[in-house]
Image (cartoon, rainbow, N blue to C red; front, side, top):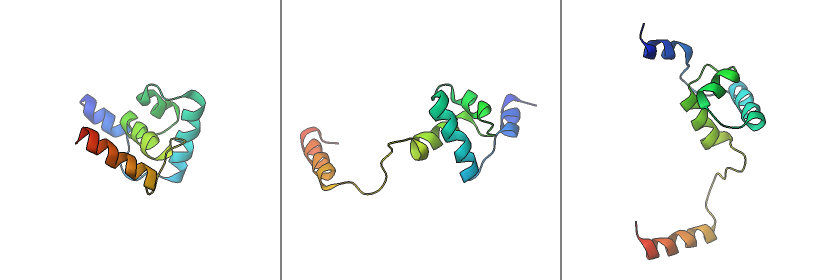
Length: 86
C-alpha cells in the first residue's frame, strides 16, 4: 500500500460537522496553530492537516470578518486600485 493510500485511509472527506468544529477550535485556541498534521491527529480528527488548516483560517479563526464590506472599505479598495492598479 502506498503512502497516499494510507493517508487517504486515515483522512475523511466531506462536509465538516459542528462536532468536528468543536474539536478543532478549542484545540487550536489552547495549543496554537503549528504543524497542522499534528493538530489534526492530536485533536482526534480523521482529517488531513491541510483540511484542518483551511477550516481554521476560513471559518473558525477568531476575529474573522464575514459578510458585506463597509462603505469605508469599499472606498479604500477604490483608492488603492486607482493608485496601484490590478
